[in-house]
Length: 172
Image 1 (cartoon, rainbow, N blue to C red):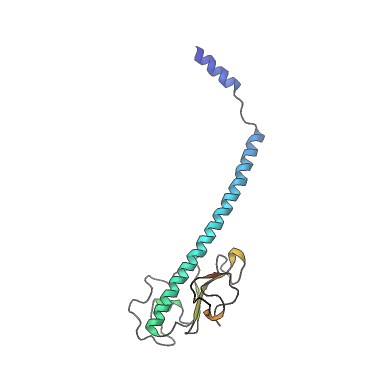
Image 2: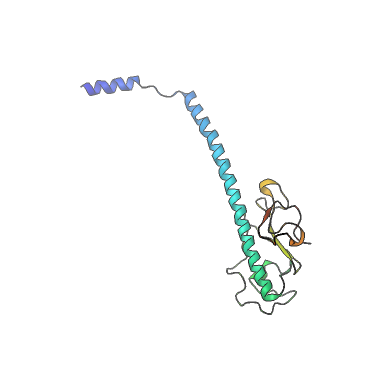
């Protein structure tokens, strides 16, 4: 008997949260969530830019291997596809390997599923991505990402890393 009267007293003494208290709590959670989502999006963008740089450095290594075997870089017209199949136009590569320089069915794309832009005169080259917006130019997180800064790929440091937001177009 004592238990039931205790339970009745407990139920009668409990107070619920008011609507204003619930709304204040939800507002605070929403504000905190905004900061968390903003930080997550910044981290996601940083990861995509780093992934782009890694992919461009991989293509840089394959292009250097192409030059070592063939004596020249593929031209802009031959494109990055020449790393997969022997180029048919322009200069001929006599020592082109049967399996090409890249495994797979297609040239890798940037993290935003766009093709990398490749420009070369056969002596120098540059690779770049238009970044998240997929358009030339852009500022901040929409900046273009270059393997080598400056025109014609003649960057100091030999393309050891990508430059986000480089302003000059890659090659003429």
